[in-house]
Image (tube, rainbow, N blue to C red; front, side, top):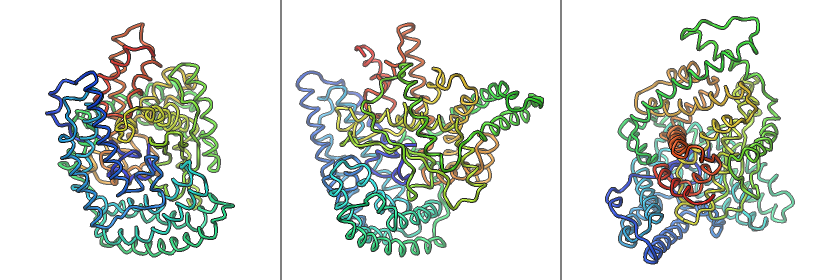
Amino acid sequence: MLAVNAAFYDLWPMRVLSAICPVICLATSLFLPATGQAAETANQQLYSFFNTFLEQRFAMHPLEATELGDHRFDSRLDDLSPDALKRSLTHLEQTLKQLPREVKYASLDRDGQIDYEIFEHDLQRAIWLQLNTKPFENDTRIYNRYISDSVFLLLTQSRLPGETNIANAIGRIRQIPAVIAAAKQNLKHPHRPALETAIRQNRGSIAFYQKDLFKMTEGSPQTSKLKEEAARAAASLNEYQTFLESLLPASNPEWRLGKRKFSKKLELVLDAGITADQVLKEAETEFERVQREMYVIARQLWSRYYPTEALPPYDAAGVHAAVGKVLTAISHEHGKPAELVEDARATVNRIKDFIREKDILRLPDPDRCKVIEMPEFQRGNAVAYLNAAPPLDPEAPSFYAISPPASDWPPQQAESLLQEYNRHMLQILTIHEAYPGHYVQLEYSNRSRSPVRRAVQSGVFVEGWAVYTEQTMLDQGCGGGDLALRMQQLKFYLRAVANAILDHKLHCAQMTDEEAIRFLIDQAYQSNEEARQKIVRAKQTSVQLSTYFVGRMAIYRLRQQIQREQGKQFELGRFHEAVLDHGSLPVKYLPELVRKRLERPR
C-alpha cells in the first residue's frame, strides 16, 4: 500500500494513496499528434500552463507543495475554512475551462497529448470528488494530514538544513489551532467509520507533540520554542479529542457510497476502460482460479506440516480445510513483536541481490529507501506503507514503514497480527512495498521529464505494479522454490482480488459486516484482526481497494501479449524497464508506450 493517510485519497494532487485519472474527453482522441518544432513549442505551452497551475495551487495549499517536494511553503499550513475550500474548488473549475483555450491539443506530439489528457482527467476527477463526496465535511481523517503529517514530513523527508526544518515545523505547529477550528466548522455529521479512526489517530497525534517530536529534534537550540508551541498544540488537540468524541452520537452511520456514485467514482479513478460490474465479474473469476491454485500447493505441503494426518477429502469442505490448515501452520513461523521491523530490514538485502542476479530490472542507484517503524499517529489502516521521495525533490529519502503490534494490545491480538505477517508474508510485503515494488517503481517515475507525470500519478499503475512483482519474483526463483513462500504469495494475491470484490459488495450490494468477515476469513483465509481492519478501510476508501487487482491484471496481460509477440527475443528486465519508463500513468496508455519503448535499445 502506498500511503501515509488514507484520507488523502479524495484530495488533489494524489501522490500518496490515489489513482489520479478522470474520464477521458473523447473529442481529444480524434486528433493525430503533431511532430517537429511546432509540437515541441506546444508541449512547452502545456508544461508552462501546468507549472502556473501548480504555483497557484501551492499558494493555496502549502502542504501539497511539501508533499510534492517544493519546500518554499514549509512554514505555512492550508486555510481550510469553508470560504477557502470554495476558492480552491473554483480554481480547479477555472483551470479546467482555461486548459483548451491555452493549449491546443492537436498541436501537441503524442507524449504531450497524453500529458494533456492526464492533466485534464485529473481536474475532472478532483472536481467530481469534491462535489460528490465532500471529504472535508464527511471524512475526519483528512485533518490529521495537516495536524501531524505536515510536521512529520518536514523532519523526516525535507533535505533543507535541520534547523530550517525545525523552524518551519514550529511555524506549522503554531497554525494547528486554526486547522482544528476549521475542522470544527466543517464537520457536521461525519461518516462514523472515518470518525472512529480519526479519534484513534488523534491520540497518536497528542503523543507525537508530547514526546515523539522531541526524539526527532534532540539537541536543537530551538528546543525551548518547539516545546512551547508543541504544548499549545497538544492542549488544542486534547480539546479536539473531546470534540471528535462528541460527534459520535450524531455521526452518519451510512458510509456506503451506493452503486451509482461508486460506479462513477470507479470509472473516474481507475481510468482503465472497465466498468464497476466488469471489475466485479473478472475478480470473482480470478478469485476461484487462485483458490484452486492454493489447493494444489497445500496438497504438496500437507505432509510437511501434518505428517501423521490424512489429506482431507477432495470436496468443498475438504479443500477449504486443507488450505486453511496449511496456512495456519505456516503462520506460526514468525518472529517476535519487537523484531518485526528488524525482520523486514533483513529481507531487503536478500531480495535486492536476487533482483540483480536475475536481471529483474536495474535497481535505483543510490538507494534512498529506509525501513522505519510506522509512527503511531499514522497507524490504523494498514500494517505497512511506502512513503516515496516527492517528485519535485527526488533525492529525498523514501520510507518503508512497518507497524508492529501496539504496546497496549492484548497478547492474542498481537499474536494474530504476527501470524498474518509471518516471515514468509514479510518477504512478499517487502517485494510489494519496496523491491521491486513501490520504492523502485516510484524512483523510476521521478525520473520522468514531464512535470505532469511526476506530479500526477495513477494509483492503478502504482498498486498494480507492486502486486504484479510479487508473483513475478517467485516465478523467477526468489525464495528458492519454497512452497510455503509461494503459498503466502498466493494468499496475498487472493487478498488483492478479494479487495475488489469486497469494495464493490460493501458499497453497492449491501454486504453486512458479518458477511464481509465471513468472506475474508472463510474464503480469503485472513485472520480475524486483519479482516476487521480491512472492513474498516473499505468503508473509508471506496474504490481504492479495486486498484490493486485492476492494475495487476493490466500489466500481467500486457506482459503475456508482448512475450508471445517477441518469442525468444523477449527479455524480462528490458520489458520491466519499458513499463516503468513513462512515469506512473494510467494503465490504458501502457500497450502503446511500452511497445514504442521496446523498439529502442535498453
